[in-house]
Image (tube, rainbow, N blue to C red; front, side):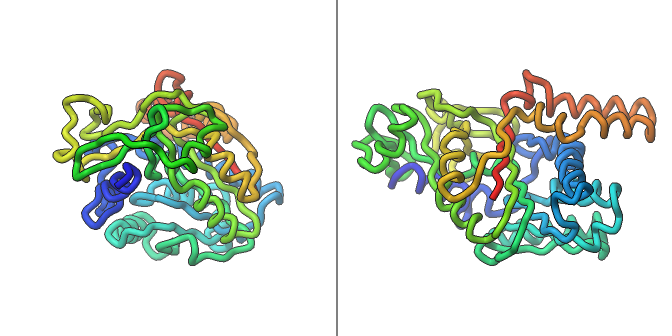
Length: 328
């Protein structure tokens, strides 16, 4: 089988890494922006609120999260929207697309604990269940969760059990990566189908995603495993795939140009592509922190500032992570 099939089984198979609910943060294998600080979700919600306030977006819009894990991001967004205008909780709809039943169950328990019966968050197992005139869609770190092929000098990685070897790559794959002058590295599989499905679900749509990567290929491998906050390159001689299979997260740096080309071909336009730091500041993160400082103690404020620094510091998430915002 090709490596993409192996990776798909690793992450999403019957006993795959994401089959059951996995802790993220200190108790898990890695951190995300969502687990770092609730100001991440609040900043995105503040941007959405500004668009609603000016009449650019309707008050009865659908806010949808794809790949929501436990639901903290959309939960933080709902909380901030309620702070801005409590009536929005009555006019807006909230939803999640999550295909794993076990994760859906964890989400329902989380929302009940956080909001009781005051907020309804609809759950769908696939995008195809939705057909809406408009949706504001968020998906944190979704592009690196797509399976990928591994290519090297005209060859493609194939797997036999847990042993990796190389054979001549299909011509269609080589033609696909030729415009990017890629000869080595990861090639994501599924961006095109995902963009088309998203376009078919919504007449109009804003799609925002944060992920790590660049708008070009490095012509090197970035694929790696995360386990208990340690990083292991896939090709490290100490990595035994049979032992790590389905027990650790596996990911790679995103080629954003590949994602952009897929979405543009599906009828989207690029509204923004920028660093996470620049995007969050533009969304009002600094103003949110200043308002928070006036409402809490100095100790609690400084604690939250430390967390926010992780989100925007150039040497941490600030520059490595990018926002891409597509509009249809």
